[in-house]
Amino acid sequence: MMEKIVKDVGDIQSRLIDHRPVLQGEIRYFIREFEEKRAFRECRLLEKLNKMTSDTNEHDLPKCTENMHDKLCDALTRLEAANHMAQRIQQRELEAEESTHLQLCLERRKQDWEEFLKEQSRLKEEVDEEHAKAVGRLSAQYDEMKKDLAKYSSF
Image 1 (tube, rainbow, N blue to C red):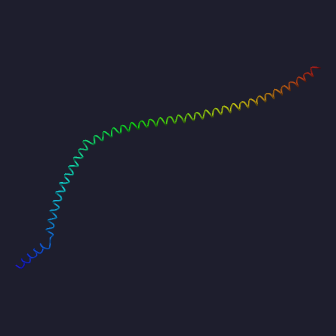
Image 2 (image 1 turned 180 degrees about the vertical axis):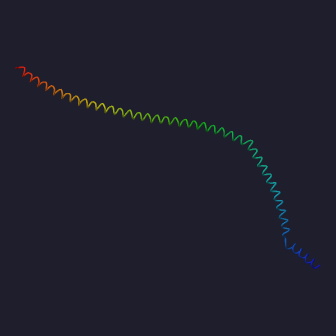
């Protein structure tokens, strides 16, 4: 019987001093309640997210896709126009550069032609001078020959 009393006293003491089993029960209850409420909140949140996603897919996505298509077509048209303008500007610059090159070549040819004409004029003057000297020498030679011939014809 003493054993039983000791056991009962031990049980009473453990209930009075050791609160772990009670606390564990309370903790389990709190966790269960928290998980149930949390699961309910999460379920509602997931339903809201699902509805929002469906609405977005049904309404906003087609509008955005259509707007994007329109804007991209407009941007493509503008880019093509800008590209065409850039090509025209490049062509004009190339033509201007070629024209400038042709002008430079034409100017150089004119200068070369003028120098050629000056050189020809100078050479003509030299030839004319040489010719005049040769004519003068030949005239002097023929005059001498006439004199010599006149001396001999008097015999």
